[in-house]
Length: 85
Image (cartoon, rainbow, N blue to C red; front, side, top):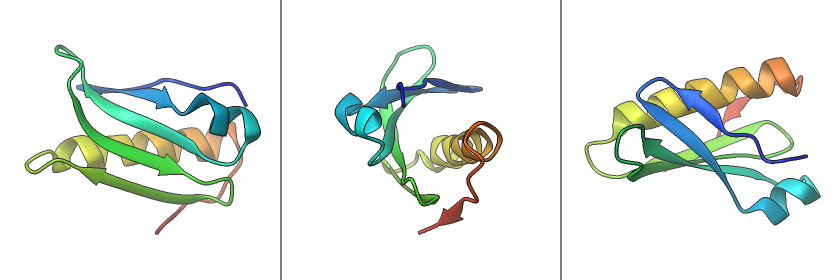
């Protein structure tokens, strides 16, 4: 699959590790603050629907928004049933 960037309100998700995207082995995004582009979290979706993520201290809101956005993308565009790891 081609890498996909996602807008998540105050944050945007920048596709990372394009080789894994192209091989359909995992889909990873860095979560960026929309005005500064500072990376504050990271989320990964596996082809089986497993969703994981981590955030810097104090950036739980960014991680929550990113997980919600990736879940929506995975379910609507990919037809996956997403589950948290």
